[in-house]
Length: 323
Image (cartoon, rainbow, N blue to C red; front, top):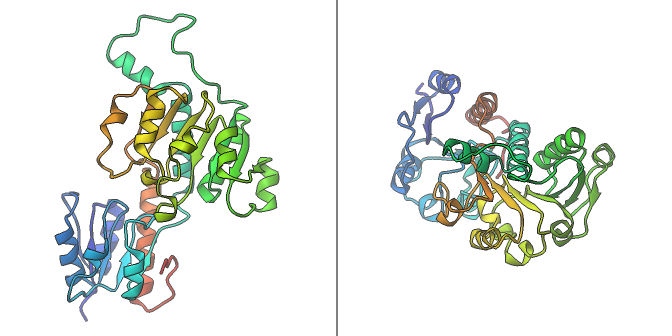
């Protein structure tokens, strides 16, 4: 009996690729290059399963390709706003993702960006590398205190709560958050967290605002100029969620005018393209979407995809089914 045909859109950790090769008739992206819409269409027509990542776009035009063979998109990543869910649902196309295993690593990156922005880490690194540092002096590159400051979280799921634990127990930060419904009492008690009545209240009150909401139409440009104008002039914005949650032009204008102290970004609108206006600013720290980029986490994500594929082809319940 022939093995199911599986298409992997980008390079994965080698240990997971070896398992894929043992179990399936798999095609790997050995060059690890971004693929085109036509290549995605071809994969949908010729494979039983396609495994995209969060940087691969599957809009309606791609999903509506004729003579589609693929029945499952086993996504390497938690977010799935790069897939047209309405179209996939109408076609009974199964989608799975990889929740749970990247919580701590992504929260670590959020804290990294918070610290980089607060203490002007990226700016200081550039100064030293350019051999422009002229030595210590009492007023050089003064920055923001983290210990005891207020961290405001937009969204309060697993990653936000993990960041809150690191911030509260590690740095003594006060935790405030917004989500439509209150968090579990045990979480609130552990973090001494306060739920705000609105996003606006978080924006006005926090010294550091960290975004942890999903992407998609409902959150597109959620953080716009009006929201940014509510922030303290000493505040910092951190985004490890999705790039399109923030209106990039509004953020650039806000940072240029120094209406807030700084920002730290791991995600961008239209990535991997980054708005050039961000590149000219000293008061923003930029990372290349590293949230889950640890060896253990990326391997665990691949194992999650593998588990979903195995369950699908054995006609068993899928552990991480989205639709």
